[in-house]
Image (cartoon, rainbow, N blue to C red; front, top):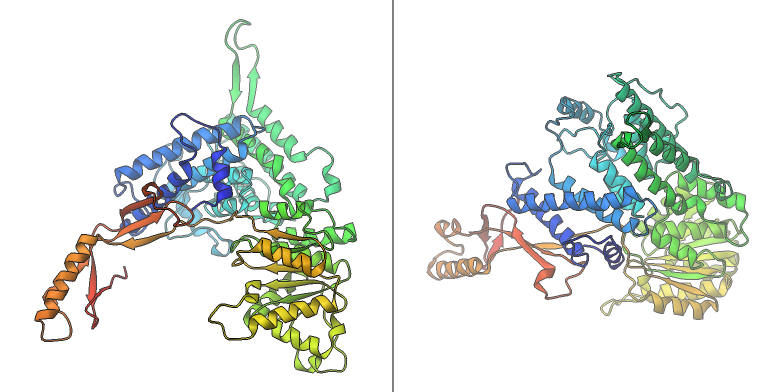
Length: 610
């Protein structure tokens, strides 16, 4: 379930008694599998009555693990291992939330079920909020508590796991109205999903006064309003020019101010030698600590922090980045590593083999922007017409100030002079044809991008010329535009280092192999199995019935006996590469047997679709 980079991160979490950090990734995966299997058994959310004892033990363990690791992060925001502790705490919170029913009553909020139903009516599925037909309680921050989904969202941001934070933010449900709490919760959710513009709208609603105006309630409301101001300041810093970030962070100053207000000493309460009296608001204090940790590193992960490549005007570069940052403001760790290795340097080519969903498009768009701002054209190769259209549409949205054409029409192709647009997206075959008509039309190309570049290597059974044509297209382009950089992209490329070596030989310049194993998403792989002795018994029954039957099919009395109880078999590692029993988990998938059918082949056929 976890890639090697994340396994290493988990292993660097602060040690605790009875906590095996090496075993923890498998424990997390096993917990996820238990919850999934339990939900299948219950046909939906796991209820208190339906939870197994093992699942209750698991949830209790995850709660304690989340509390302990979160304490390391909150009490010492500068702790070296805070990213690892934050990820472990966030993952534990996430597992607990998956297993719990959101709703019911709360001792601190007697009207929480009513609030949940009102909030559920306001869910806008277009905004990505979770909506499964169940009323969800609003996400709370009060004098003594912070909702676990809000903590988990911030913990993932601290852990440099922005995709996990965005996923967790879908569970964040601001309460109705414009209270300080509601606006703060909404701002944190928008921060996690990268909607920085929504944090600082042109018309920010006025804060509503709390329903109860006790001194304590008013104090909490004031603290939450200041935290909201801090999140708004952080959003502005994420969209600021790098030169403007040299001065002290306004967001950090606000979060430190709230810490001082939420925990302060009360003088003249006891005599000099007696205990010290303090005023404390644990909820705002804890949230201020988490936000302080977020502010420490998140700006450094911002897209707007990328310096202009050599030969590109800083103002023009920042304009492109700021426009992109309103949709995708964060760089993932694999993006930052590539840039640190010189990916954006003119004259450097690259072979990128990140997994599916690993952010290859973000890197490609940065390289394309650098080429365009250097007054060079870009050729993007895609293997199918459907992908040509899809890529042209995406690049058209990303580079609205430039001409993006998804292939040239026949009229332009066969004219006396071919003029390439600033970005042309085409198939290798079409590009090869254009080169044969007018090779010098490609002389001012500065970047050649080949998406799904594994096409160059044909399969043994492939009798088409597509691989040969693609290779000829690349070779001809490097002849027509010898100064152009090459960017080869594929999630299925297993030899990125070899490919980068070939690019270096082809261009005579540096070429990077970008194949970091980190994945922004995780999957627990499993399959449905049945007890072998039961299947063997059914096979014997079926064979005996067919031997005696006078018809093609088995008799109804026999068919009624063809059933078995399904089990889920999960691998607790990222790949099924071991035969070690502890790397796998077997658990009941349903409490009842499921029916089988039998066809002309006289073999069992799975016939369950529930």
